[in-house]
Length: 308
Image 1 (cartoon, rainbow, N blue to C red):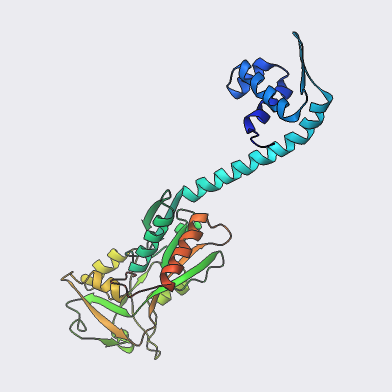
Image 2 (cartoon, helix red, strand yellow):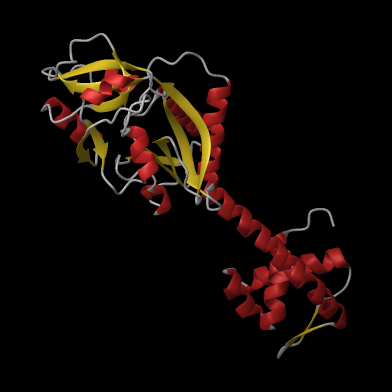
C-alpha cells in the first residue's frame, strides 16, 4: 500500500455514493476523467475491480461493498482527526487577551515577549483593568487572563503565578503634613484619610488595598472611593485623601509635582497574581501562565516593576 493517495479513497467514496462519474467529479471539483484515473489507480493497488461499468449505470462489486463498509468509518475518523488538529492549530494561533491592573511590570513584559517568541502567530491584546473591577473582565470573558493585585478568594477563578512583591508607599498631596517625611509607620495611617475602591470590588479585596485600621488596631479614616488609579492620584493631589501604592507605581508617577510618595513601614507587601477562569482557560492563557512561571523560575533582577 506504499504511495496510497487520500484522493484515490475520496474518489471511490464519492463514486460509491453518487454511482455516477460526472457527479462524483463535481463533488470533488475535478473532471470525470480524473475520477476514472483515480479509481483505476486504486483498483490497481487492490488487484480487483471496484465498480461495474456499463453505458447506462455504475454499480459496486461485492468486493467494493465490503471495502466501502470498512473504509467509510476509517476515512471519517481520519478527517475528524485532521479537523480537530486544524482547530487546535487555529486556537494555538488565535488571540491572547491579557488584562492588567496598572502598568505592565518587568516580569510580565518578559513573559509576554517569551510567549510571542514561542507563538508568533498568536496576536496579543492588552487591556487595563479598573481598580474597582479586578475580576469582572475575566469572568465576563473580556480577557483570557489578568494580572491583578492580591488577594484573590473567588471560587470560580484560578490563581496562577504570584510575583512582584513590593513594599507599599503612601501617595499624598505635597501640602499634607506627612509629605516631607522620609517614611511613616503603619500606625501613622490613623492620621490619613485613605482613598478606597468603590463597592463593585469584593469587600476583602477593597480592605486589603485600603485597610480600615492599623496593625495596632487604630481606626484609619475612610477617604473618597474611586474606580481607577488615575482618579485616586488626582484626589490625592487635591488633598482629598492619601492612597496606598506599591513602590514601583509610586516611582512611575514620581514626576507629578503635586504629589509626594512616602514609604510606609509595617504594612504587608503588595503582590500581583495571574488569574484565569476555573475550567474554562484557553490554550493561550495556559501557555502564558507557563511563560510567567518560567520567567519567575529563571528570574534576574528586574529593572522596573509596576503594580498599583
